[in-house]
Image (cartoon, rainbow over all chains, first blue to last red; front, side, top):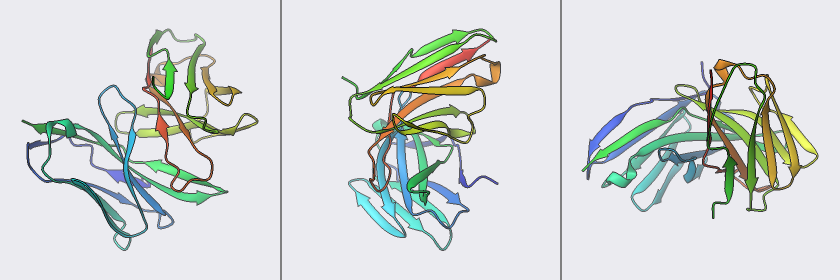
Length: 113
Length: 114
């Protein structure tokens, strides 16, 4: 069983829709929960992160962590064609003095105009 | 100009050849990483370096070696390339002692081993 599971998609939605992207994990020691966005032919870039449980909002994006269920989500409101990308969840824990990061496999999102 | 650059961007080679992928950064970060990305497997860590004298193996280091020539340069070598090393390779950097460990990725190198 992988430490981090993520549905690869692809997920195709119309412009303006609310998008929900999710990951599950098995290691309860994870402390930081991150979402990276990767455009085609580019490297991933950090979109937002949450420490421990709870919600965090940044513009149209909301990250949600439920540690009791080992489940994290990224919601995108009023989705735009420019949101079309692969979204990778990532989680980190303290390991020998540094934050060991584990990435999900990524969910490919397409927003149709 | 990009903060993290990788060369080459694309490379096709044959089984048994030695290949070097190069990474340079202008972010001034001490930590550098090499990952490979495969469909269905995501990003997997090959090697990481916390400074010029500190190099560590990641989860899939077999068949690879690295060299940290300077704070800004980190190279990945495939001594004798094999077809299952065909993948997208990313270099990344991060600052020391930040929470979380935000990693900044280069644009990637697409490597094909025939």
